[in-house]
Image (cartoon, helix red, strand yellow):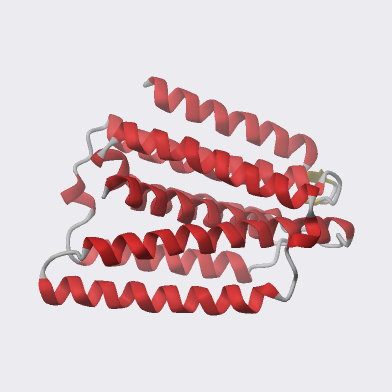
Length: 245
């Protein structure tokens, strides 16, 4: 087995064992509130493990980019990922097995979508991955030590910022389509803004975890961890974009 794949499989095994031990009640089969914070981070680790295993497996099998990202199939991949994400967010945790199956497919799809970054520059991929880990860990620790620096009311501004960023990215796509080339300065500026915005989301979602831990009634570790996972993936991809320009 490829050494990278082995490392990521061990990461999956570590997180799955932790989840079985801490997150799940077997009678009946459901999530339990004990170790709420730990359980969410175990699912974040599991998500990264599945995504990285997907990426490394595609590379190990020499899957060419043009076989995955050609015309309608690229659009289908993106739409499928969005549809799965929406399904996960709205599916209650009582659908335990179905939710986990959709979750695994969603993370695998995300691995396929970031595969080009791995193929483009493996060393940069690993370097940015470590930088992302350090940044996310630092921000999470900051909120743990000083929770009051992040106010609940900031979510409105974060949401408005996210809409603005989405519109700016759509404008960028239109500009690329029209001019047949990427405006590197515009792209780099948006990447810096994205890293800043999703760093704030990391802090906000981390604080929300602490609040949810104190009021836990019907936990859903898949949904809760997806917020942090998606924040970290957005930071990763934009930091990669900045470093690659």
